[in-house]
Image (cartoon, rainbow, N blue to C red; front, side):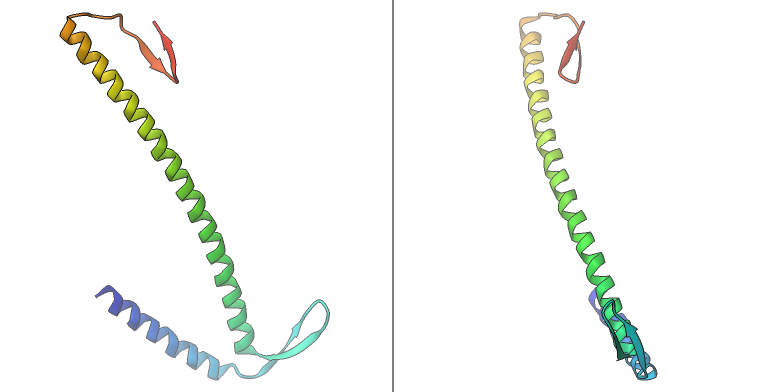
Length: 114
């Protein structure tokens, strides 16, 4: 269902683009740093839109890769902390079996305080 809706929206946008292209066929001057040329207005608009799409796509891809790298590092950190929790739970279970009550300690940032 989602694909059908996207296909219909894409078709509508294609028809609107075709109408827009037919309405904007006159040539306009395009000034470069080194010269000037006459291009159809629709071509200037489409090239500008394509360049904007490519630029935003590149930025999105870079952001996606940096976020994926951050997710992986956070997952590694979670694994280390889960291992630490499991170790501490095993120690607690051993103390409970031996009926030993150790002094309470607060652990923050790998520093122990009494």
